[in-house]
Length: 474
Image (cartoon, rainbow, N blue to C red; front, side):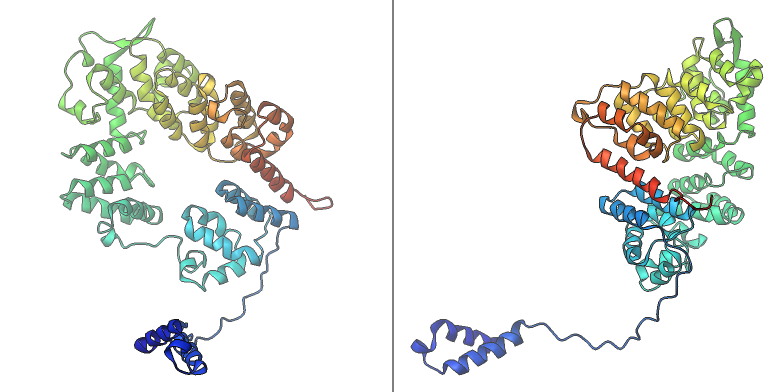
């Protein structure tokens, strides 16, 4: 056929006047052979049965205003706003209407972080639709959001997936997973495998894991030892905490100028093998200051309030003084999550920490107190550091936090590349009602009509679209 088509093309180029032949026959050959050479194949006959009708949706749909807001959110592709819409829809006992279900399923498939929010608004019709395509099975309700891997096969996974798989199993069956980790830790020859096993204990960490972590402190691999020590320091009633408290009591005494090293005592001599076992091997806890920091990082702030017979604010005031204040506060920064009131400790520690260390300290705090700590610590921060810290706070912020950070941002000079433009994280995560009430002040301080203000307008519309209408029952 190819030869016939090539000959026909040649005849077309020459023409029947010069080459001879019948023009009608040449055009007929051209039509037939061209279709044969370049035409599409006929579709195969489909024998599959059509899908059964979709089940009815018993849940209510949102009001038209909320539906319009959802379409606008999906057009700007804002994950935070989409998550907020889903949360409000769930709280109001409504689900997304049918025509947006494929787009929501596609977003959840492409972005696993959105799946937990999207699942809540799919309704019966959305879960049925998820069964029609393999890639959407995560939302069908017939399978978990993540694929479970048998414990025996976890260590055969790629390195980036092993810890996540073990931690998922820890959430569902911590006892069996702990037994598996203990057995594999004893048998594993590769330090990378042992480190994975220890890291997985962070999920559902509890006193029952102490024996495994204590044994890991004797591991020859520094990475395994340091990971075990980091997790042991999260157990407030551990043997490690008791050893550290004993060293602090033996090595430090309280003077009029704060805590100082006692003469002829623990920290005036070289560390023993037992003390070195309780210190990080990464080089951050070397020398007297490092040893003090390691001991302080191993006890909860309650140790200091009990020893000084005061509250967190009073204890933090004492530890800010003295020649070893920096070492002590750097250690305490690792224990802020265990403090009854972490704010005074965070402010005190921030005086000795670098910008990145401050962000790491705040990231380790529970969400319920992270907002308060950011507000307390960020008094003298520059714009970029404040922006990075605010980006770590879960949204939406409380009105009190939003008000404080709004004033904090407004008092700072804008970076040259953001002159006149409002902080994106403030408008995307702050309390929408409070920001809306301060619209005039916002636009006066940041006059550029940018995308950030459009996001805030959308957030205000979102809140209004779910607000109870006149006549609705409370």
